[in-house]
Amino acid sequence: MNKTSHKKFTASSPGKFILMGEHAVVYGKPAVALAINKRLTCTISESTKLTINGLCVAPDDNSYVSRILSANNLTTASISIKSELLPGSGLGSSGALCTSLLTSIKRMLGKSHNRKDIASEAFEAEYRAQGRASPVDTSCCTFGNGIAVNCPKNLGQYLWTASKNGDTWDIFNIPIPKMTFVVGYTGIRSLTASIVEKVKKYKEQSPVAENLIDEIGNVTIDGMQALSKNDTEHLGRLMTKNHKLLASLGVSCRELDKLVNASLEYSYGAKLTGSGGGGSMIALTDEPGKVCQTISLHGGFPFIVSTSVEGTNVETGDLISN
Ligand code: PMV
Image (cartoon, rainbow, N blue to C red; front, side, top):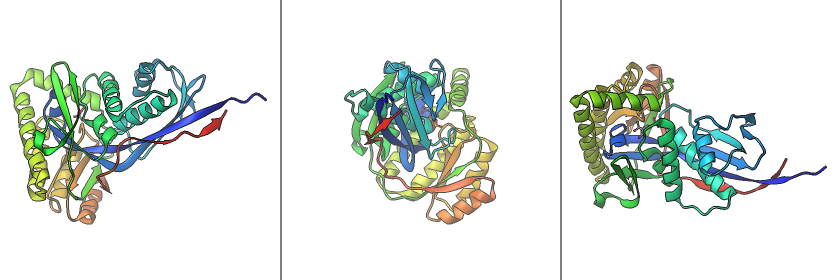
């Protein structure tokens, strides 16, 4: 029997949480995101059909996968995705998917690429799929560790700049002091595109939203300074303030508020992370066990995360047969 061999290429990217500045960052305000020790792994090989985890997929849908394939002049491929990140949990599953898929595609096509290329192409895919986005998620998943957007220049090492519709995002790598974070997942899937759209409408209709977005930007700059001084207590207070501003912007929900309020007893600060409306919250704490316990008692799903993890990597290029 005539067997063809196809090389398979695997890459993985970390998830992330946004420490401060979500939503406002869509409008060019500052933000900080940290990569976490939960990853999404993508393996690709040539195929005559488009399959994801063995299932045939229509190549013309509007998914991140189809957009990334067509941007690389591909219509078919065999793709396998393994993820420790729940979609819609606010922990960067789409950013990790876009960046690991792109990295594995570039290897398969023998195209030279660096992290900036991956971050910028992944941002393009997210922007188009969501209708509006910032490059914070895709940059954090690509570069790993800590990413600051539009931060004071002395606080980080410059990585790259993204621009869209008059907004500019200068992206920096920043040092991350040792801190303990607990994530609390609400169990409710958050729909980033629709929440981002809701904020856009609010901003168009009311100067109150515009002021809240400015205020989130100011609090985030203060948070960046606190982070650089390793001032955990002040950083925690600013995180909680950031949560209140996000709640006023209309992106929290009862479940998130409940988990944030419950965690505060044992934390320096707590807030929703990512788009909100469900998804997850984070707490900065020295008592992770107690925070996990209270999150569980209040109906959430807690886990302790490690930060300072590496970004997208390229792991294998093994030969497989079909
Ligand atoms: O919930 P996530 O992981 O998709 O994060 C969304 C973050 C936003 O600031 C709301 C949107 C963006 O593109 O920055």
